[in-house]
Length: 179
Ligand code: CO
Image (cartoon, rainbow, N blue to C red; front, side):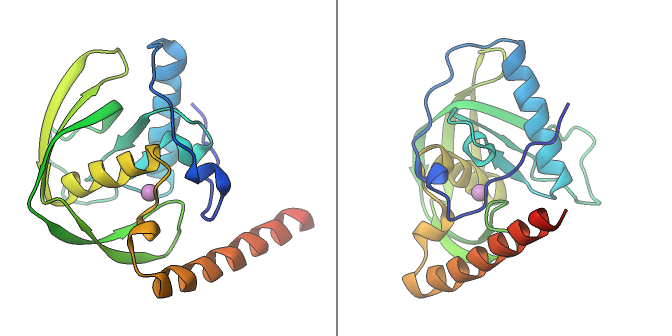
């Protein structure tokens, strides 16, 4: 397993549309493991393949990541080729993103979703979710379409966050150059 580097917004690669996964082989399983490891190492509850520079329609979610209270049967989700069968109601959630470190903002989402998806072996599943899991499924699927949560907030707040991220990226580059 290996940690992958997470792209920081704004980055043109985060605006691209990802392609459906058609091959369910060992490479895909390895990528899923890398993504889970990278997600946990960065204290995230979700990570989409385009965030590590791969335009594949897949993401990982673990809504109990970093939580003390973890149900015994809690399993991380690896979601491939997700498709919304139903979206209803609405919910406002304070969202964050590993590609926008340290920042959060309120986003309006569907309150209840039903999603059809494949696992890393290609088998089909259906899941119905609300609250954090429902929001995470929508946030991560957005990544596969090149949409960031900051694209769904007001321009004023987005511009403030953009300036902070540009400064952060500059600092990281300076750090790297100094090594
Ligand atoms: Co995100």
